[in-house]
Image (tube, rainbow, N blue to C red):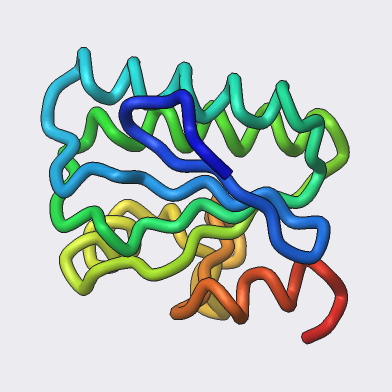
Amino acid sequence: MTSAYQHISVHESRGVLILAIERKRVATYELAQAMGYELIDAVQQKRAPKVVVDLGKLEYMSSVGYGPLISLRSRVGEAGGRLILCRLSPVLYEMFEATRLLINPRSPQSLFEFTDTLDSAVAILSGHD
């Protein structure tokens, strides 16, 4: 699927909307805001309750990048959907873990579910885990 977006690419697999961040770095408010608009627009265009955000290309994200992802999670949740992050680099994983934004057994109040691979995220959301 060809993407009309500058910062993300969009495709679907097994009924799951996959939004891939196509930047190596998200370090400015302007970039984070533009990326956030694209993420929200893609979800609204597809009306998909099952969403994966693939962070595999993203090497660094400053704190400004959390806002768009939190907004996206809220939108998906309000629509009765579920969102999973996947392919976090070690640096991003540490940042999310330090801010308690990832769901894990030690921190059940966290915001985001995550998986190591895109395939596992799609399998969970499509009911084939």
